[in-house]
Amino acid sequence: MVRKALALAIVALSMAFVPFAPQAANAAAYGPKLPTQTNIEVVTAVNGQQLVFRLSDSASDGTSPAGTINYTIVRNGGAGQVVVGRATSSAVQVNGHAVLVKGSVARPGSYLVSAHFSPTNAARYLPSSNVNRAGVGTAIHQGSGGGSTGTTGGLPNTGGPSIGWLLAGLALLGSGLGAVAYSRRRTPQAA
Image 1 (cartoon, rainbow, N blue to C red):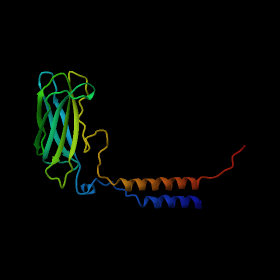
Image 2 (image 1 turned 90 degrees about the horizontal axis):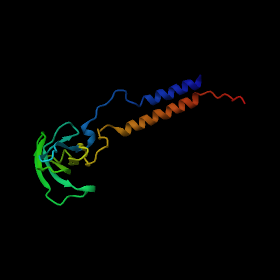
Image 3 (image 1 turned 90 degrees about the vertical axis):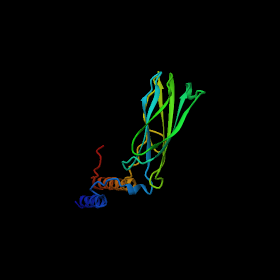
Image 4 (image 1 turned 30 degrees about the horizontal axis):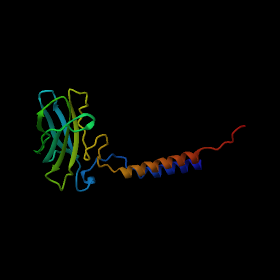
């Protein structure tokens, strides 16, 4: 009985350090600068028509900060080789709305679009980059990845206190294991 009371006290003590109410992510947890994401969406990629892409940006606080997006549209050859020819490269201003950009008349093949966002308020927002592919007459996946590093597939940093939750979870796990091990009755095995 004493063992069970001690195990219950250990579990209750470990629960005292875990907050019960969920806490929302706070923009102040990011530090002085907020991460942004550059978005590239394929609007038109049809043989014989002009290539059209929609460029936009967004920040982790839910806003779309003002700034400049420098973009390049390049026609790729086989195995990732750039076809000798003209690349469309320019810069557009964004101020909370997506911008349509037009490239050259599309020919069969794949096109690589890269974009880099430079925020006007560099003291509050971080720059970001992105790359997207568009296929004309080919079977290329047309995605619109994103992220501050220009890569896709990772989880976004939502600003939550991850270390605190990790330590609280490990403390709960350890106290639970200790409580189970301590309260388990040891009986001899019959041979």
